[in-house]
Amino acid sequence: MRKYLFVISYTLLFVFGCKEDDHPVPNQRFTAYINLMLPDYINKDAFVAIYDSDGSRIGIGGVIVYRVGDGHYYVFERYCPHDEELTCLVDLEEGNTSAQCPCCESRFFIISETGDCIEGPSDYSLKPYRNRVEPNGTILVIYN
Image 1 (cartoon, one colour):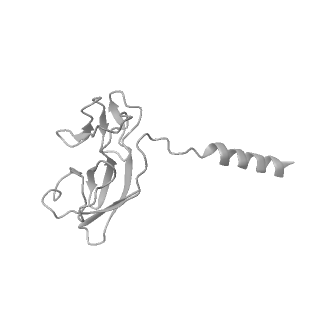
Image 2: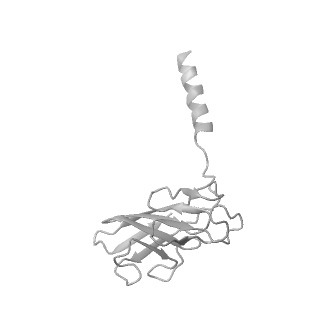
Image 3: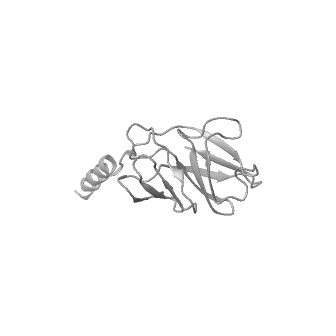
């Protein structure tokens, strides 16, 4: 009896416990390389990047990158998750700790790994992207 209960519980957990990504910004497969030694990026705590070192578009609408510390970054898609049409791009605000959508005026906290909405109508945080820094410390690799 315990065996059957375990199997049923495990099956229910597997079926109902794994929720699909319901973020409104679609997944876009890509790998991008940013040379952190370029003038647009060197010594900056936060920046916007639309194209990578090879000229390929990053993500869907570009990314916002926040440097947490040496070799550690948070990277977010620029499309506002509140905009169902995916036409509004968030921009960095003065101070580089948040980004704001010019369409709905939602503000997002970019100095946390989740990119939470801190003000405005958005029910979602910014879409985060994975990243790593190459061993030489000069190339940021962003991928999804």
